[in-house]
Length: 270
Image (tube, rainbow, N blue to C red):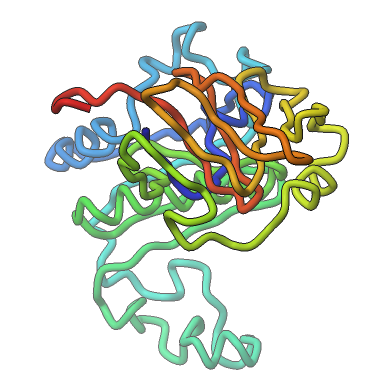
C-alpha cells in the first residue's frame, strides 16, 4: 500500500484542457546532424513540416500558437558585436555598457571571441535563437527555454517536456497503517480539510468525503486505520466504528494531504 505526500499529477487531478505543444524548427549543418538527432531523441520529431498533418497552424487545439527556431552556426564564433546589431558605446544604455552589449571598436568580437547564443523574441510568441557552438547540451537547454517561454505566454499551464519529470517519494506502508501514529503528519482535522475543499468535496455522514470532480478520490479522517487484510479503512465517529472498503484503483487522502492507495507489489509476499 504505497503512500506519498499530496501532489497534483496529471493522472490524479487532470485539468480537462487539451495538451498543447510549441512548434520548433531546428536547423543544423550536415556536420552537426548528430545534434539534431540528439534533441529529436529527447523531444520527438513531428515529421516533415511541409506535410499538412504536421503543420502546427492547422492544429488549432494542439498548438500553443508560438513558434521557435534554432539555428546551429558555430562558424559565427568571433563575429564582431557590430554585425550582431549591438550599438556603439556612445549610443548604448547604462545596462548595455555594464553587460558589454556594445562596442568601442568596429571589429570588437562578441563574447571575447568565444562560443555564444543570441536570441530574438517578441510577445507574439516568435523566438529565434542562433547557437554558435556544437555542444549538445546547449541545443537541449534552448528547446527547454523555448518551452518555458511559450508556457509563460500561454499562462495557466503546467510546463512539461520529455527528458525530465516531476518526482515524489512513495513508501511501502505494509498491511496496516495507522494514520495518526505511524508517521509524523501535519496536524490537520478532517473538518478543516473539507472546509478548504468546499464544493469540490461531498461530505458523508460517516465523516468522510468523496471528490465531486474525480470519482475514486476519497477524503478520510486523520485517525483512519488502513487494514489491507480486512480490505477496509476504519475510524471512530461519535463513539461508533465507521468503515469503508479499501479498493485498488482508488486514492485516499488524509487531511494533511498525505495520499494512499492499494497496489499489488510486483514481487514479494505482500
